[in-house]
Image (cartoon, rainbow, N blue to C red; front, side, top):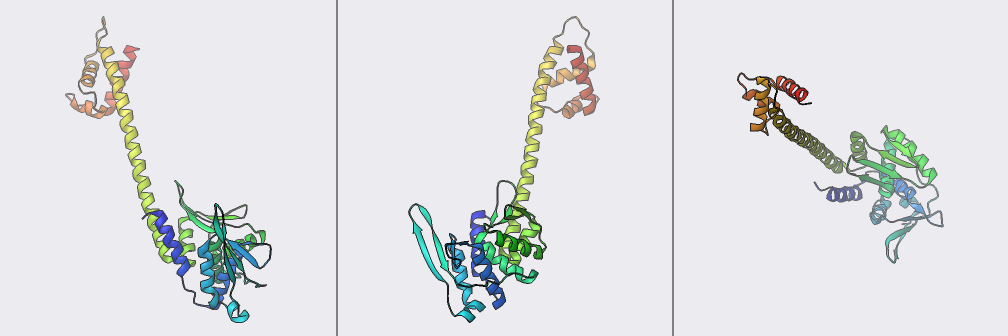
Length: 279
């Protein structure tokens, strides 16, 4: 499957996943908002991910924030000349809910990933990452990831997961099970393709080495057979003559042509003797 197409489907799945409880909706809303950059006001958030704003508006009516406060975040699209538009969200909630255990960490991380996360496929490998600019949110993220038991690395408030199984676990628990299955397919196909490429490169290198060695041996065979004033051993002459007659043969194939046939190691030994006489 094309990776770009699949990543689009992954985000669609993230956007459309249905929450089953107010607690989960609360935590996801919290994760979405806390992952966004803050504008001049502590209650104004900014994101250039339009789908993240759409997700917030989709789940907000299902949250206790909406039930208790009876308001919907004010959203405006800000356009800029020669730059991508961004979304400004005004949401005066003083106390956003935070993850306190493994179960509600997943709902919060799902929202956070929508704001600051991504899944990437460089030329080699793959990784899932959360890039967080706010130090306080980074500390909360670290605690939430610790609750999940996943293996991750941290570098300057950037949290990265590289393990195949852990990425699959993250996608499943963040409400993207179909995306997790497709991720498995891509990783498997990549693994098979890489193994085939390694084997093909290995075979190509072997062939190149064999051709180079055969060419050098043909040159040495001519030089050996042209020696004057020396009684050349018959067994060595046979090997040299065969090399000139069959320049593309491997050493094993050359040995098989002799009568009686000899092994590859014996052919190698005779070539060393030829080289000693020449040099």
